Length: 382
Image (cartoon, rainbow, N blue to C red; front, side):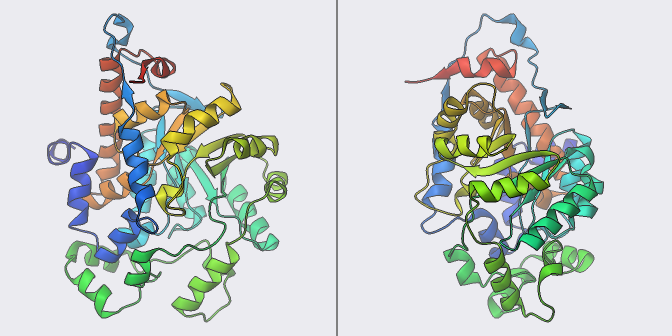
């Protein structure tokens, strides 16, 4: 870890190295958004614009405390791993080291329906830290079966993503012909031949597949046909009635992810959600959407101080985690940085968690916050 600390002291350094290792089509899928990608930039820019006023009289902030609890589970830090799809394409074999690092350091790990490892296998790696994120299919039988599998695998928290009502048209992915498994074209071949580390890992771990979704597809589909099937089956708005149907089937805690509108946040809570994740899907769905940082305080105000409000979007440091908590979040999720870290080293995800903890600790010392609940009082509004 000492060598990683010197070489990659921040997320920015991990990102710089990861770009030299990940093929272009996978890199563009991971880092890109939709359309001109203003929403991706807005997530970062709005968060970077949040200022905090340091105060130096509080001696209790010499050793700040940032452990927290969610649903009765004590956690070592107020941040976790957001659900990310296609991880095995972006960096083959990365999903298990990320989950294992989250488990070892006692932070939440959320597995995507679009993971390239099965939800059952991944639960053995994430342990009690593991939550499962459900893209609700519009086939009630398939929906019930996925919920059953998650329940039987031992997941206690189900994260229902609501912000993908229809397939999106992302320019970068169209140009690259992105698919899983990847189509072998002259373009993709030129990308992978310049990334020998990625090729070696692909040879070691095999071609990625949608392990949780392919069992429901008709047999014998081509790559293009499979993509069309998944796009069709996972479309449709998650209305309050659909959420209630999921709520009735799920005995554990239920979180709604992809909420931006305060009124809708209240409706989801009234329909049985135990918490919400403020998110615009990393800027990948609607380029005109507001940032997570802009909507977080409004949703907190709407739901009140007792509601569980979490967030993702644009978080790249421990300082950013502090900013989100100051804006009203109880817990903060990061996605892309964990993939940057995984591409650096199998120990990269654990290193990233260490870096974020150190940055958060230092930020709290600098502003004078002894606990996480102190952070909102240090927001500065010029």
